Amino acid sequence: MSTVSIIPYVPRTITVHLGQPDAYAANVTVTFNEYVKNVASSEVYPTWDESALRANILAITSFALNRFYTEYYRSRGYNFDITSATEIDQKFINGRNYFDTISALVDELFNSYIRRIGFIEPLAAKFCNGTTVTCAGLSQWGSQDLARQGLGSVQILRRYYGNNIEIVSNAPVRGYTPSYPGTPLRYGSRGAKVLQAQIILNTIGNNYPAIPRISPEDGIFGPQTEAAVLALQRIFNLTPDGIIGRSTWNQMEVLYVAVKRLNELESQGQTYISLDWQAPDSLQEGSRGQQVRQLQYMLQVLSDYISTVPRISNDGIFGPRTEAAVIAYQSFAGLTPDGVVGPATWNSMRNRVSGILGRTESSFLQYPGRPLRRNDRDQTI
Image (cartoon, rainbow, N blue to C red; front, side):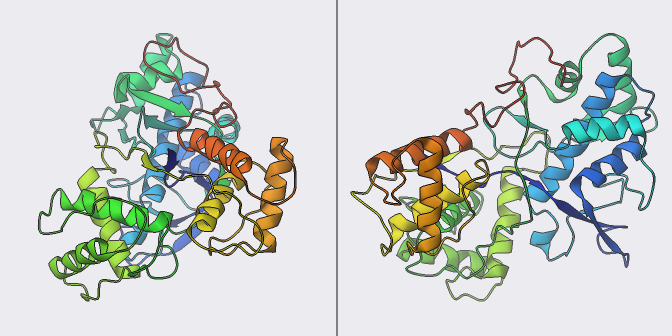
């Protein structure tokens, strides 16, 4: 059984709207690293104890990644990822200078984030100053008090977010890739995006019983999937054509995030989803079809973690670029680099991808080598 999911990643850049979402205001695009430095320099004091600074930086990063990962604004038609309005997002002051102490810690931590154990999405790690404003999340001044009592950053975070959190380190960094597949999904479409759509529709259907269930969730856009799409489109006044275009996808995404409460501290959480991908007898240049798409999906995942594996498209056609990616992976894995995908290469890829997406590979969690879990002693995150 192989795990299929969107992989949370750190974007190279993030676009900030300098005001309320609907206010006429400029958008600025900065590197994600710069964004975290800006917010941290605007929210906390550089003279605070290091463990308090680390805890706050992880909270800032996780909150921003949650907004980015759930496409909170973009799925609503906005052309930015987050705002500078402090009552709903985080304090960002365009053009400000950064404190050296904070800047150095952000360089170390910016691609680490908090999540709940067993969930995929970065935690919506809400916080407030704890003096003039209080909230259910982290208290900034309270975190400094705890640091002075000798608590480490992970201990501080668990005081506010609970013991069922873990720190993911060294998340991959790449450019923004919209969750929308780029072309409409329709009757006859197949693949991981169809599977994702089926799971989204079934999840939404838990709150909207008029949307019929899809069973099994198999990655094949058949009559049940079409009926579910039509029902959703009629409920939410979209063109009832049974096709998942951009507007239908965005509506599905907004509803899914709301139903799962992914933007809340106590969310239902996005968990791992599975699809049984059987090893083929042989795939090679010239092969076409669903198994080639599955192969290309696995190669896309692997390319995020193995620098020698080139990024390829998912078109279901085993061409020269797919062959080159297969050879690169085979060389990396110590397999015969012949560009042919038999059971040995397929199973090697599937096991590695399942490990990556299940977050069990130590190559992903380079520090502390595994997720931090309940009852662990504090680590110097």
